Length: 178
Image 1 (tube, rainbow, N blue to C red):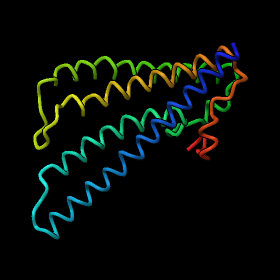
Image 2: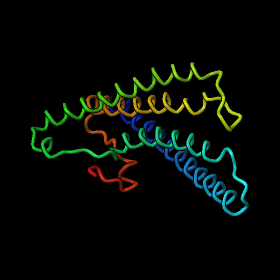
Image 3: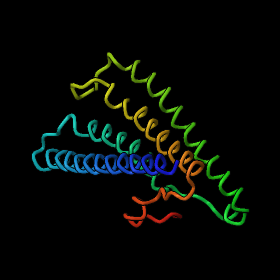
């Protein structure tokens, strides 16, 4: 079981690294598009009709992917004042329960986000010649990543408790408690 757990953790870490690289690219494109919008509007006095809409769609993608990455890295705020005083078995149970809640939230995003994607298949963006499927696709993709990261954490903590799951977070010096 430990070998399977280590493989799952390695795949989970790779998924996180890819997600973070995509988030970095999205943020870079957002900054460039916003800067172009400001330059065209205030320097050239000829606004770009599409810059704000594209930035909004990129921001939605960044939010959905970033939320999933935050779950993996345990970077979301948590209050541990009571939990840290409980017995270790209860702490483990609460951690699994919390991950189960996040998994359920990801399932909701996946199901209802998938429905939104199918409903928006024929719609196009207001100022961009793209289908609205692309912005709405961020919801089920983010949900699938939430499900994946939570499921791996639950499985590994129960199948092979000795396997570390925070290798990427430790490498990036992300604190466990914010």
